[in-house]
Length: 192
Image (cartoon, rainbow, N blue to C red; front, side, top):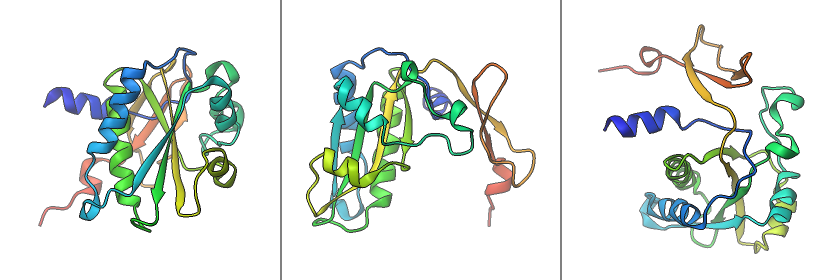
C-alpha cells in the first residue's frame, strides 16, 4: 500500500519531457489500464486515439495550450521539451452522451500506469477540439473529451500545503520545478 500512496503522491502534472520514445509495451499497458477503469452502468463509452509519430505529435502539440497559471514562456514546452506521445480520450455519444466520470477514471488509470514506468503526463482539455477531431477522423457521434500528453519528464513536480484558501495556483520554483499547492486534509474532509 505504501508503494501505491507514493505513486499517487508523485504522479503530478509534468510539462517538459526528454525526446525519448515511450516503448510500445508501456503504451499498451497505459491503454489496458484505461480499459480496466470502472464505467457508469458498465456502458464503456470511451475510445482512444494514440498519436506517437513525431509529425503527428507536433501537429497535436500545436493545437494545445499548456499551464494556464503560468506565462507562456514558462508553461508552454519548447520544441526540445514537448511530449513524445498523445492519447486522445474520445466519447462515443451513441453509447452515452455524458461520460465525464468515466473519462476521469480512465485518465487516472492511464496516468498512474504511465507513471509506474517513469512516464509523466499532462492532461489537456485546452485544445483545438474541432481541428483535432478532424485530424483523428472522429465521426459525428464521437466527441473529443481530452488529450493526454506523455513523456519522460526533465523536471520534478511536488505538492505543498496551501497557505490560504485561495492559494491554489501552481508555480515554478527557482530550479524550474513545478510546485502544486493542495488544500490540507482538514480543510476538505468532514466526519459526521
